[in-house]
Image (cartoon, one colour):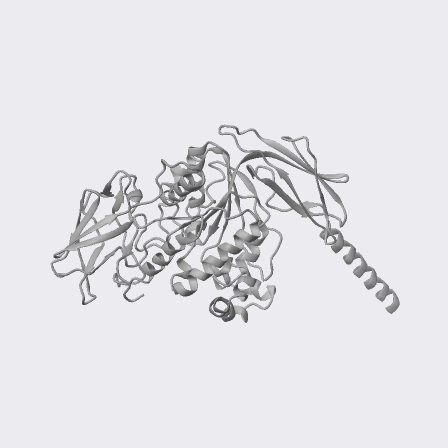
Length: 500
């Protein structure tokens, strides 16, 4: 009886090993490669997946007679690329592709040729078009009407399910869908309005891949080796958390918000699986979870994260457009400026090649960290892309930005960079400009009365006889009204470097 049991156990182990090997070498495509997807124009479409080691994979597409081959390596992984032509405005012809492994084949249909944007971030990128009360998402402004009008079959959307992994994984969970009133409600509001504006201006198919998680931090989207290779980053971001997740089982047992800021976990689950995806660029809305970071650590963190993404995507210094976090006041002290310091840090990131920033000072809601006007945010990201990436120079993407100031007596005149003034200065509500402050040598700031005079702002305070420093919207929660006549808000600023 004992011998029979041993034989039976041995058979079970052999069978389970055969099944495991079969599962590992099954002929599959990466999950993000599906019917309904948009294929990045003008680049090789990289296709990848698994097959039996040594198998030859053939790729056939209806837009070319050329058959592409790829070979599965010893681990059963394969990757191949097929050239995709440039998109033609107004051409929404659906395409097909067949990937063949011996007698097995996978057919992809309803494919469109256009531009693919990778949309990454935390809750304000994750916030869907519709309301989700359990997550304190109130829905975008007029979300019922926006959903009803979302009939854009040339916009395709893929939402990667938020996940956390101790090691990089090959796949995300998600499905490519055609943008419609039936599908758009659960998708990122910012990403949708970004893609919609691109489509309306360019008239080509737009693919949007969302990879976001509420509460996510920049370090969570950063590869572990990047944090390990820099002593400062390792000490600031990696070491404090390493003892918390030595195994995937430990990660799985933690609550969502206990792990969402932990370093590398989101990179492994959401970024790494996308590295072979051919894209046009990235739209990024994240920052609230890093507000307390010092610029001396955050700028290297962000810079290294982006440099690593660009290296690993192997598509050059692709466009990277991000959102400056919106006004939000926690507590009752309206003079706090920790968030203002972080916004200032975000503006410094514009020094990185091929980046742009959408300003949100006028659309925030002081008491809500998830403001509902996601349309303005998404469209401003799109304005950056339309001007900088697509070369539509008549599309203004930047609001008024201070260039210098002059003091005459107790009166200050602010001058702005020409390209941000556009057709002139104005205010959103028709009232005088708000949230200006001046200080003298005593470093005490007082509210200033301000008015628009031509292309300048003139301001002063009866409490400051010799102004030496000016601040505009440099606190945590000011919702501003100064803008140009294109409706783009002025950038917050300070002219001093006190209390950095």
